[in-house]
Image (cartoon, one colour):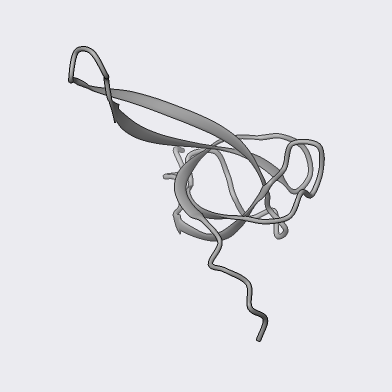
Length: 88
């Protein structure tokens, strides 16, 4: 085994499919406003690599940091936690 450190994993929702083997994943978090001491909701959109093309819009996925795969992709999909409901 290598001596690599544990890579960061994040749970988010697939917001769009952008090309072959690529998805955009949105994850939400809350921060405390420095002046008003109120929790403010924020979101971040990251590009992730989907090797098996198994994700659809609305799926909840776990993504992990990886080496740069392209200009924007720095994460890859580890697993699909929940599939989005199919309507119709």
